[in-house]
Length: 70
Image 1: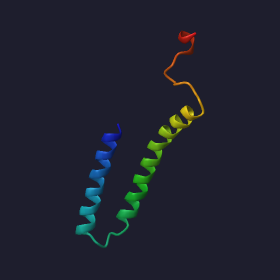
Image 2: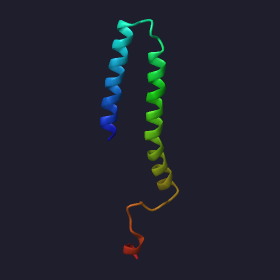
Image 3: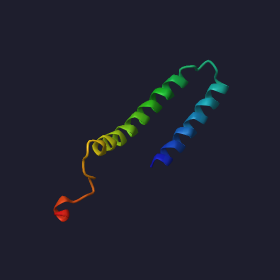
Image 4: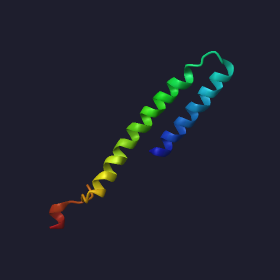
């Protein structure tokens, strides 16, 4: 899933750079795209950070069925 997201982000950067090349006065395109891109990156990182914190505090993997283990 991260690979698909990275591809779309790269394509978006290419489109923004083309738009800025042809319309140099449209200088708000870059900060707007950067803000949108930052939101997507943060949202994608939250689940990964949650999983890492869960493992660091000694939590069992969520796919582990404790009843079957007992």
